[in-house]
Every structure is written in C-alpha cells, then in structure tokens.
Image: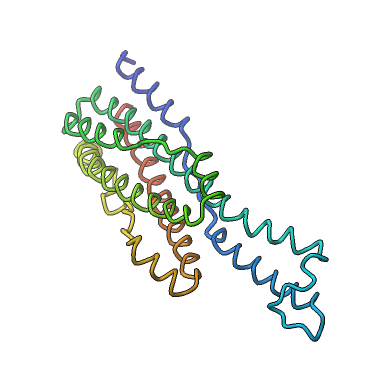
Length: 246
C-alpha cells in the first residue's frame, strides 16, 4: 500500500469517527399545548362548582398546578436548546466531513477538485456557531425573543443547505465519473423550505399563538428531513471514496 493510500485510509477513518447527526423529536413542539390543556382540566376539577373554570380558583392551593406551569415554561426552552445545539453540531460535523472528503478527492486527483475546494470554503465560512446559553437566557427573559430564534433557525438552515447543495453538485459528479457503483444524486439532498417570518408572525397573532406551534413543528420537521438525507449522502460518499482507494 502506497503512502497516499495510507493517508486516504487515515482520512476515511477520521471521517467515520464523526458519526451522524441526531434527530429532534417532532412531538416536542406539541408538549406545551398538552400541558396547557392539562392545566385547564386541573383548574376545572379543583375549582368550586359555582366558579367558572377560567377563574384561577384553587391554583394557589394546588401542588400540581405549579409544576405543570413550570414544565409548560421549560419545554419551549428545551426545544430551543435542541434546535441551536443541533444546528451547531450539524454545521461543525458537515464542515469537518467535507474538509476530509475534499482532501481525499485532491489526493486521488479526481475531476473538479479545485471547484470542490472553492465550494467548501464558501460552506465553512458560513458555518458560524451561535451561543446556546445566551439565546436560551434571552428567550427566558425577553418576551417574543423566541421569534428571532424561529427566524434564524429557518434562514441559517436555508443558507447552509443552499451552499451544501452547490458543493454536492460538484462532489457527486466528480465521484460518479470514477465510481459506477455510486448511485446517489443531488436529488437526494434536502433543501430547507423558506418560511416567511413576517407571515408566520401574523398567522400566529391571528390564531392567538396556536400557529406558532405548527411553526415550531415545521422547523423541527425541516431540520430532521435535512439531517436524514444528509446522513445518507455522507455515508454513501464515504463508502464510495473507500472503494476508490481499494
């Protein structure tokens, strides 16, 4: 085995240690509404029969209500944590994976290596990290700050998926020219849907906040679908480069 083959094997092994990105439960955005409904039921049960359910009677006497209210408050913060942390980890993993893959392509002298490296630079430059702690604290303290989190989660993932797509177009074509067993195409890459922050805020106001639950679900669903297809593509790219080096 030549020195170049050994170097490629080392890069492939390092690439495999990156693992795969994790999904976020699509059920998570719906938990707050479930806890709110549960809270209403508890108030109805605890309130005197001659008291309308919407009056906060028995709330101070209940040892159950406060924990439920606390959970209702914490669940969205936990969701924001999962979003931002997942975003950061995904950007970091993808950047490392394509950096290793690009070096392998350069060593193997595959076509379009120069263009691939240029696309990689564009992708990594936009893979900035957002502070999880700062955003969670701000969301806990500042009313409506969560709307900014909704906004940047969608827009950051859009920019990321667009730049990753440009890189994958070159990388997939380059690999296909040398590996006939590589069957993936750019159609296997999931691009994030552009969701209008302004329109979604208006819809949330009109529906008294209920539309924001769907909005949170949509962001989670978009993220998971992108992650699922991204994991498949990176796995196949790694396998193809391994075949080419054998």
